[in-house]
Amino acid sequence: MARKVTGAKTAIWTAAAWLVGFIIFFPILWMMLTSFKTELDAFSTPPSFLFFHWTTENYATVQERSDYTLHAMNSIITAGGSTLIAMAIAIPAAWAMAFAPTKRTKDILLWMLSTKMMPAVGVLVPIYLIYRDFGLLDTRIGLIVVLCLGNLPIVIWMLFTYFKEIPKDILEAARMDGATITKELLFVLTPMALPGIASTLLLNVILAWNEAFWTLNLSTSAAAPLTTFIASYSSPEGLFWAKLSAASTLAIAPILILGWFSQKQLVRGLTFGAVK
Amino acid sequence: MGSITLENVRKSFGSADIIQGASLEIEDGSFVVFVGPSGCGKTTLLRLIAGLEDVTSGQIRIDGADVTDVPPAKRGLSMVFQSYALYPHMSVRGNIAFGLKMAGMPKGEIDRKVEGAASILNLTPYLERKPRDLSGGQRQRVAIGRAIVREPKAFLFDEPLSNLDAALRVQMRQEVTRLQKQLATTAVYVTHDQVEAMTMADRIVVLNAGRIEQYGSPLELYEHPANLFVAGFIGSPKMNLIGREVAGQFGAATIGVRPEHITVARDGEGWEGTVGVAEHLGSDTFIYVDVPQVGTLTARTVGELGIRVGERVRLRPDQRRIHRFDTEGRALAA
Ligand SMILES: Nc1ncnc2c1ncn2[C@@H]1O[C@H](COP(=O)(O)OP(=O)(O)OP(=O)(O)O)[C@@H](O)[C@H]1O
Ligand SMILES: [Mg+2]
Image 1 (cartoon, rainbow over the protein chains, first blue to last red):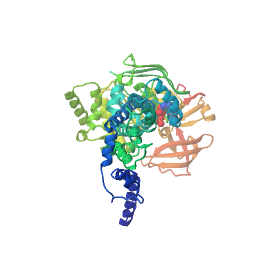
Image 2: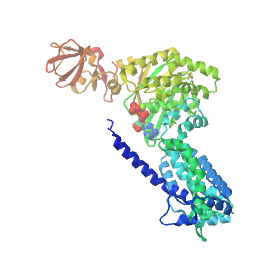
Image 3: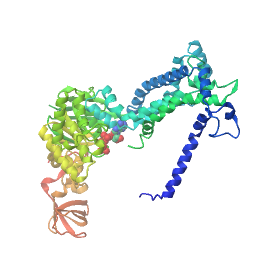
Image 4: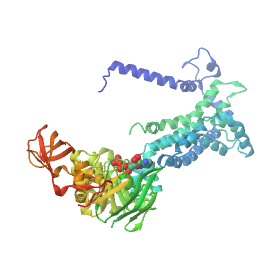
């Protein structure tokens, strides 16, 4: 039976939903606003919301003091590279676990996830030493490896859950129709799992882009991605809120734009199992 | 061509022996039906023939060639799944054409064949639709179209009609039979519906707990069940099975009489009993009669015979149609 929905109720719920949405978005909005303030305005109490002296000088200073393009380039290469490698490993792994499971498949999944249960800082020293001895500190390849390994368990888990939604019958039908494994993967499995694959890819890019623990600890300048670039503005010289905000805005801008354009795919993928 | 031979095929999942040594000879062009109770291994045996499951031991041959280790894609069989298993992202045309594309057939020829299959199955108006926009019966036809267009050595069907309503099931049953005769392609068909088995099959395989109980034509199974299981399984209502002294009089451990082979009368010869339940179906009436020393017997009478519950009746089995079984349940020669 359909519920009766009155106009007033709808209005209240709509307003409440917008309010919650606004609260969630507020930190990002505040950061963007602060990036256009002078350092003095950024500190003032009570803070001013819109009526302050708007300036773009923070962006100019940030550009002058550090090489945004280099860091952005590093972010793109490390986030993109680690994601692609992770997907190349995870897709076959997840197929195998979803469609040809053994008695130990569940255990392996849990075991993979268990590596994420240990705090990263617990293995910082050994990894740092290994990286130092192999000359991987402050290299893009070093960051790609650590980001890829860090996200791999989550990528495999996500793909596994999407793949499990695909009825095995359909893959068997393809096999009966004479499709080889490659063709079955290419023409039947991939198109059916596309929303899931796309959203896993996007989420992994976002996670890798914002990863700060390993990137801050294993890179300093040459390979440093945008996270290091932001961190350099909360340094010993004291806090510069406005410049920190400007740097952060610059750092998240690419991922925000990417997220905006792919939101339809992202939502479709994340709710893939729910609406069949 | 499409003869299929199973030689002592076994299949275990872990420690469970699901198929316990099946040997079977399926002739080219015949329609063979697997029946049996739920969980007896019908689907498993079909999937072994398809190659979707690996045999634990034994051999499977198609047209004399050993295919035991040949992957499903290379066996040249096609399968219609109970769930239809259509490709959801492809149109009806794409679904039917998929197998031909995999075989690398030129586009013009594919179109011609797809349209031919579609017109046989009345699917022409729906060729550009996606499976989700079709009714259950239409999806079923697409699944069949996908199977026939490839001109396989044999069709494998796993309860293809069980998701359809009763009327459509009868119609599709006839269409499938007609199509199979027309194409003269071997068909192996799994069902747990006796009526489907009896009406469609050239030969029936009765399976029970992973074993083949009997393999024969529908009439053979009806007239000469090899054992108690087949006797009880084939025929509706079930054959009456009588043990104890009564069977002893016939020199058997158990005797069986079908309800349609018992004459009901108000007096005269025969077993005397009281009618417990009477089911009036219009054309037929089934009565359940409690006979002292013998048990409850089912008998079929014509609809008009006004027999009421509580009435005393005489039951006379047709002496020539009494089945005799030994202590192990095997049929004794007449
Ligand atoms: N992959 C599997 N792993 C373990 N056991 C299985 C597997 N597939 C089937 N079985 C078991 O094998 C037995 C036979 O199954 P099968 O599906 O062949 O039965 P069926 O005769 O087709 O029954 P139904 O009429 O209900 O479809 C069942 O007991 C089932 O639990
Ligand atoms: Mg089955």
